[in-house]
Length: 206
Image (cartoon, rainbow, N blue to C red; front, side):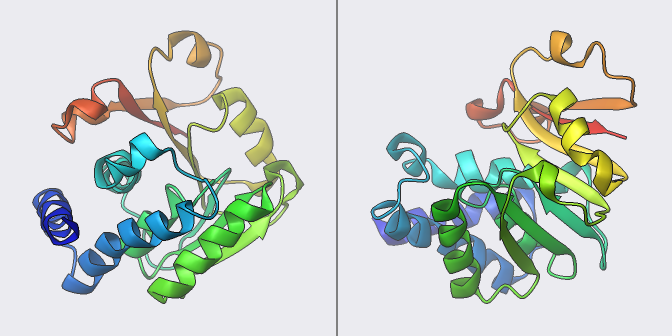
């Protein structure tokens, strides 16, 4: 079953990201086993989501890569990374970009650190901290289902990012109507054909 999962995951990722190297595909596919092992010790992902790990976590995170490819030397902050999403898949996809993954819950960062170390990711830094306490400048802020855009803007203000890129779902009209920034909303269903993405979106605020 594990080998079948590997092939399915490999095929999904290769079909959407043909530019990924064999090493990157290997690292992305290794995430399933790594998170399954850690999830048995520290519950960071629901069992239902583990059954659909590649789509619900890896591919969902990489939707950001489809709408905004990062450049070598960019510094990206992942606010409320949880178990490492979207930061870990993005760090694999962009090895010359530096990612700082933060969460206020130490046990989640423990998992992130272990996964990054197991994969040999040299472009990942982790911090146990609330987002608003960080004052280091970043080029971009990324996040997945952490807070409303108004809160993300407040937390990011002292970091001066060029853009905040957030993975969100559902009807965002009310959440975004009072935002005094340039907002672009991309439907992930236009990027990936899986039914899971029917109501998922990438929101870019600049």
